[in-house]
Structures are given as C-alpha cells and as structure tokens.
Amino acid sequence: MSSTDYFLNTQDCSLGYAADKCRLVQRWSWYRFYDNGQSDGFKPYANLFDPLTFQITSTGMRFREYSIKNLEALGR
Image 1 (cartoon, rainbow, N blue to C red):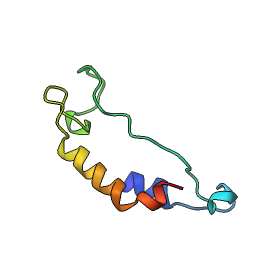
Image 2: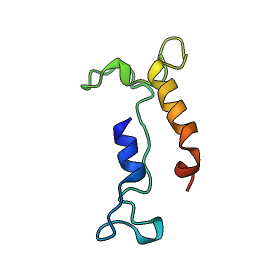
Image 3: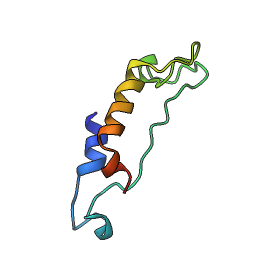
Image 4: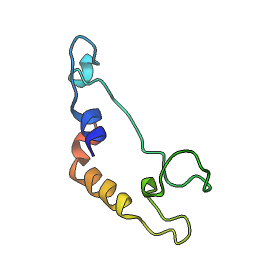
C-alpha cells in the first residue's frame, strides 16, 4: 500500500503542517466500497467488499490489516 505509506509518512517542513510534524497529508479515505457497477475505469479488485455477497474482499482484508498495523499513526 505504497500510496497510504506516502500519505502517512511523507514530511516536508517547508510545505507540511508544522503541528503535524510537517506531514504533507493529514487526512485521506478509501472511497471504493462499490459503485453500482458503473464502468468508470476502476477495476473490480479495487472494491473493499463484494457487491453481491457483501463479503470483504482480499483487497479489503489487506486494507484492514494495514489499518490495524498503523492504527496509532492513523489515529492522530
């Protein structure tokens, strides 16, 4: 999850928010739960949940594991 690592860890004191240790990104979210099957350029593997069974996907599991592993840093 290189993009979330970037959001979580990238710092630059000439650009970042000083109160947040100069991080460039303070908040973000993952939108792709499911989008009514619209052909919008995204692939089905981006879904966190299966739209038919409502079961968590392997991508959803990876996102969950990443979130738990980084819970303290994400909870700032």
